[in-house]
Amino acid sequence: MSTHLEADPATGAPVDDATAERLAAALRCVTVSREEPEPGRDGSGAAADTEFERLGAHLERSFPRVHAELELERFGHSRLYTWRGADPARTAAILLAHQDVVPADDAAGWTHPPFAGVVDAEFIWGRGAIDDKSRMLAILEAVESALAEGLRPRHTVHLAFGHDEEVFGDRGAVRMAARLRERDVHADLLLDEGGVITEGIVDEVTVPVATIMLGEKGYATVRLSVSEKGGHSSMPGRQTAVGRLARAVSRIQDDPMPLRVTPVVTDMLARLRPHLPATKRRLLGFAALAAPVISRIMASAPQTEALVRTTTAPTVIRGGVKANVLPQQAEALINFRILPGDTVDSVLAHCRRAVRDAQVRIELVGMTSEPTPATGPGPQFDLIARLTEEVAPGVAVTTGLVPGATDSRHYDDLAATRCNFAPIRLTAADLERIHGNDERLSRVNYARLIDFNRRLLTALAEPGQARAPREPR
Image 1 (cartoon, rainbow, N blue to C red):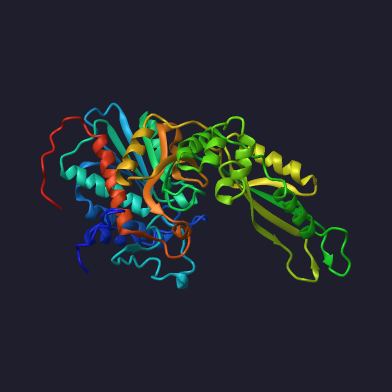
Image 2 (tube, helix red, strand yellow):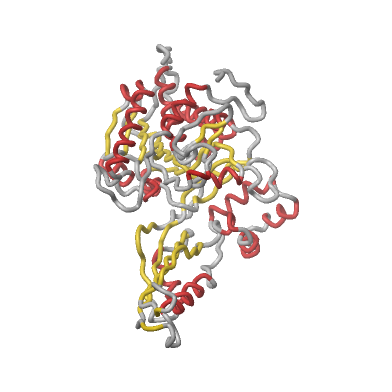
């Protein structure tokens, strides 16, 4: 395979083979995290322990300067790096990424095996190529390059790479964030996964849209459970456990939580307004008065409804053992992604009001998190926006909220500005590959991601410092 690939003038140059191979090797490490703790050093299971250790060894071989010059603390498989600044009394940034991935249970549906780490002329294939090993490797590539040039940040930079983000980060991000609090760290910038550059996603906006997320929605799962007398199905009562449960689920789904335009959405629309058709520009000119109309328009599609409502998603229902036996137990799980302004408690209260049945037990199960407070962009937002426009000219930069949960919620109080963003360009089909089949990242996107992180480090560097060239890798 050639190491010289032609650059597309419209998108940029791809990474070379050696850089692509370093990411591909990381994708070959089967660092799957699972919700149920398994025997092993850190709840990952013995086999996963081996894979995380293999990934760690790969990082240490691939980025020798990082591991020689930065301080490294391990929290199980999670890795917290500290790059001391010229003035270490302040912290410039906390850069987050995660090593773990979700399972790939439908391996037969992939073009290449999900953990083969295949590199071709255009793409790097494998589970974690987008979510989220590419961000971790891109940060390390950028730091290694900066160290090679003698670059040093003005203020301290932390790199925090969790190992259990996909199962809520309790054993990784929580512990690393606690360590930073022990040190009284308060950074200017927290940067994590979340927003990307999308093409053809925002209705009637013809340019690519870079959505720099300012926070995330909350998370809660509500369990509905019903107990009834069993018996033979030939002599049922007026209501079986399954029937009562189905009615309760239907009542919650048919009574969604109210629509609301938050300050983040107002800011997002204001930034997109110049790129919209004239009729919508006029409507947004009266955004404060037209909020009910705007929220109804946004609620017409799932991608935008998530920005103006706490979403309701029945995901699991169980009950009964046989067609001719009345079920004694039935339960359902309903997942909520909570809009700022709502809370976990208000979701629970809403469910009880909607169900109106004392025979249905309603309770929270599993992890919960409150939504990020609905605030505007922080002081470092303009830096991230400027770097985005440098590496992806012609995009429309806007704001938003991450609909899912990320590790950054554990660090939310540790930085003045929070941004969830990576400047990779994805279509609707690409977005479906995240947690789906055929996850892959183009070599051009990976080059842009490294370039973005490298520019960020340059912006954080000590002014006027000498950059003595060092020996190449």
